[in-house]
Image (cartoon, rainbow, N blue to C red; front, top):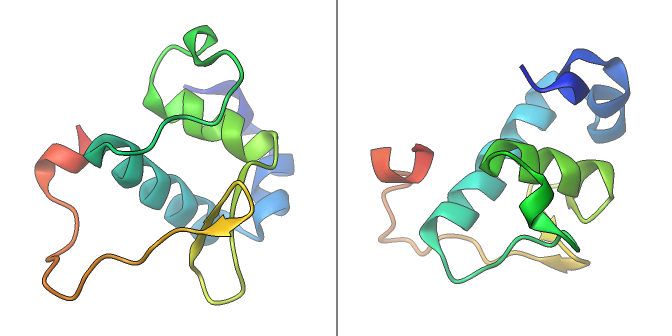
Amino acid sequence: MIEELKEEQIVNKVGGRFKLSTLIQKRMVQLNRGGVRPLLDNPGNTQNLMETVIQEIIQDKIYLDNSGRLVVDGEVAPEPSSDDAGPTLDDVR
């Protein structure tokens, strides 16, 4: 298990476990779909995509705004288009 998830600090940072889960999911889907890169200075230090996302949260590079939209590096990430049926199984692998 990722050690940072065992501590309450990351949960409190994003405003609760539900928001943390939502933030992780949205960012992982975005990274899995491509077209965006991790925001870490040295992403090679992380073991997997989940660890990369956790480090982005810890380093305040991503967060959810008040309406639950993903904010990446200070800019609101575009919402999926209306014809997008949401994440597929390929997005969560």
